Image 1 (tube, helix red, strand yellow):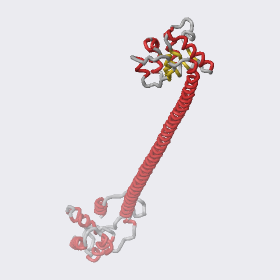
Image 2: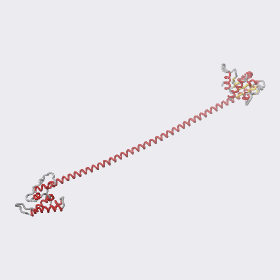
Image 3: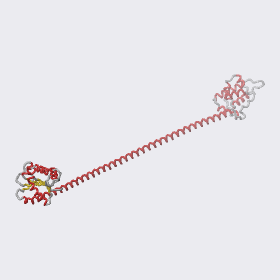
Image 4: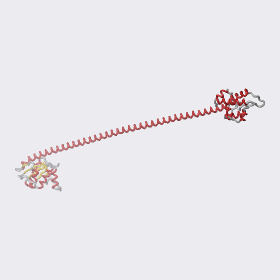
Length: 364
């Protein structure tokens, strides 16, 4: 600050103002007074307003002239608004009125009406110094208060920032925790899903293998069944062939007893007995040929021999033949029975029983 005290006066009180300014400056108090401190080329009113705004104390040389001065009233108004200390230095008996009364009615006046003027100046200097000290203290306190407020504000701002940072950090940690928990749940869900799929795949594979095993076992059983059936059919076919071969080769074999032959015949015992009786009667009643004696015992033996050779099981068919065939069949005792084509043990093609009967009838 370039000055500390602003001296306000009317032009009629210029000499008193200059004495006050000189005394204050001798005491080390910096003063601003017009027109001395108005910079060259600067607007007079603007310079005065700026000086008033920058002053801590205003010394008003109050008199009847300053009470009516518009410039003095404006300067006091500005100092009042800027909260500067105003010292009304009263040099006559004029009471403030009008606007001056409004601004000075609550301020302690400094009475200096009694001459000489110089006797009042030391007290004015002391009062100004005291006010400056108070102002300095207030300013220092204000500075300290401002610093304190700024420090508190900075502390609050710092605490706020720290709180916000802590909140953000907490939110970040919570978000990370939530993300980790979510990732963990997703991983567990993925693992469970994978395990489930693997279990289902294993179950399907097991079911497929079991189905294949069952199908293979079924196919194997069916194949074995078919093979057994084929083997059975082949065995039956071979057995049938052997039986037919045995039937074809039967004439070359040793004749079986009559009772066994009859027992193995496809006819019942009653049928065989009837046939035997029929054959015997035919042989017995047959008339004897020329030069052939009638021999019933020989004919009986011949019939028994035929039955033992297997001819008896065909006599039923012979009985149904015409008379000339049966007559030819009845003369079988006159000539020996020729050997069967397979008598020598030669193999021959299988023939039906009907063909064999016809062959035997033609030979006998």
